[in-house]
Image (cartoon, rainbow, N blue to C red; front, side):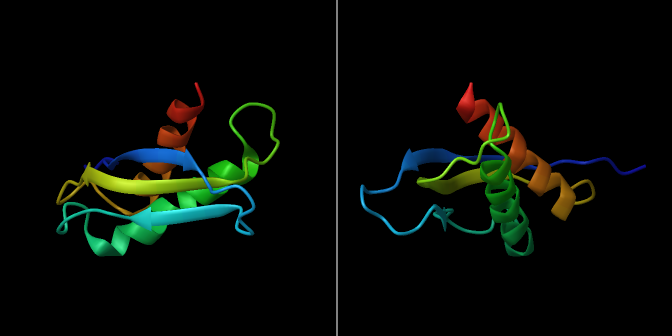
Length: 95
């Protein structure tokens, strides 16, 4: 049967001091390495992870998340897989 596969690569950086935004997501991928229909799920995963925070449940604000690369599988990739990949990537950034 099909599994769950989604891989996201990028970086996280602080927003400029004084920014009115609390979270910014930018897609800097070249081409369609990750099918475009999955990119909103990646943004949603990062946004939810920031809202819950990595450790104590306190929101993390003032972040820019930049998606630069990733990987998808023709059968095993779906919206949930990429949302969970984003949550996992956020946790890795927080370690």
